[in-house]
Length: 286
Image (cartoon, rainbow, N blue to C red):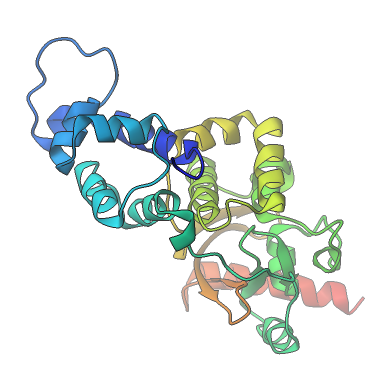
């Protein structure tokens, strides 16, 4: 008998199956279809497993599968690398699953010095839940000047970037393409949740967002998965106007994440970011 009922695995497989149209993968659709996407027997055939076994996985009657079977199912469902990694994490036996060491949500003195030394780069340290543990003045000025600069130092009032993006109108209005940003937030949370399924604080965060934001709840229910390590975002900042910034993420030795935002050198966006820094300097010298 399986050690637990893996509803995460069954629900995820169903969502991934229903998003694929038969013609996308060269199947001829015959007759009417009662469900969207592929049928279970079609996925089973494409993955080379029995229909009964696949059905048991999707109905959460079997808690896990071997990595070789999950990889076959991943290919059948045309999962992205991030989606495949997520499937392997939630679908492998608990005894084989990677469990990270507990984090203390603290920033080392060396990391804090690095953050403070980056003047024209907006930088923050996040934990895997996207709580902001530290930010430099430019990051604070860019994203949340209405919050106290010392907020990341308090566990009770520490800002969380996903909560700010969904529940704080000042932060939400920064994004020119909110639909893309909101989806990226949710797919990243879903991605990291596979490694931290028993973290009560992460569960509390997801629950709070689900209750308070219908948009988050809808996106979370779609079960899309993607990591978020680099790219470009366009902001409409109330002080300096449009800003197109590149971002990158770097994992630190303590397990936290260093997040950088910077502009292309010599661009008008770099000039705007510099103006934001000048505005900061003028405030600090008053």
